[in-house]
Amino acid sequence: MSFTLRTEEKHEIILNELCRDLELGAKSKAVLWLIENIQEIQAERSMFFQNMTRLEREIKNIKCAIQKKTEAELELTKLCSN
Image 1 (spheres, rainbow, N blue to C red):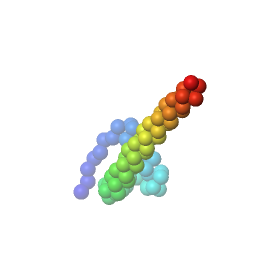
Image 2: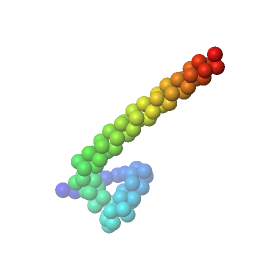
Image 3: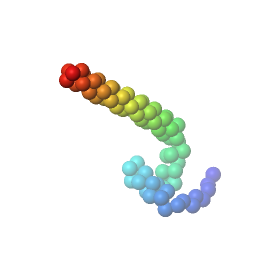
Image 4: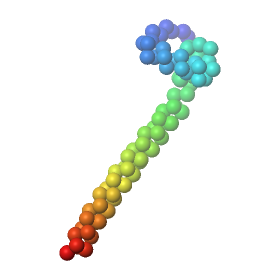
């Protein structure tokens, strides 16, 4: 099976990077590599976004804890100065 693929310039850049990184001789081999490895790529991408979401929650919790600590310190300062 053969097909013709017309890519945009940004896609050409990506294909060229893939060829370089994977040591592939042709862009068609890069496209085939993507097709053959799509499940692994999607799994890694999903794991990346899950980790990013987890880290965002941790950052939010840390910010909240810092805010509570700051408020508690201010309250303690007020109590001690009275």
